[in-house]
Amino acid sequence: MIRIIKVTNRIWGNVNHAQRLSSNVLRFSISAVKDRYYTDKHEWIDVKDNIGTIGISDYAQDALGDVVYAELPAVGTEIKIKECGALESVKAASELYSPASGKVIEINSQVETKPALINQSCYENGWLFKLELSSLEEIPNLMNEEQYAEFIKHDHS
Image (cartoon, rainbow, N blue to C red; front, side, top):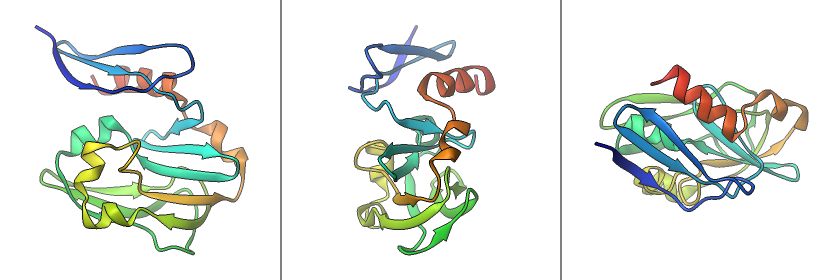
């Protein structure tokens, strides 16, 4: 028996991805974002020009459970690739890492008041903060969507 956890309407290039995450769970990941990259700690960054929008992956929000608190970095903070905040859920607390270096130019204040947005829409409405990137050279060190799907399948199944 296959249980579908989440079906999203995202397209990655021209390819639809259906990935098997465990013996009884099938997750469809179809993404329209060609510039989204992932860390091995399950954060993502969507790069447009020199601005990176950052959040946690669908896999991470599912593993955390219902997010009840988000501590985000302050606007104006210069951050490196390291811990920069925290998320708490009914299951656990998790450190938030920045996948790139830069200056925080915006936070998603809706997530601070309604952290459930992370669970409901981690890629669209539940993003966490935006960075003016210090260097685009850090981005190729991250995983693209296909590499991240393989990472989850092999490292977390």
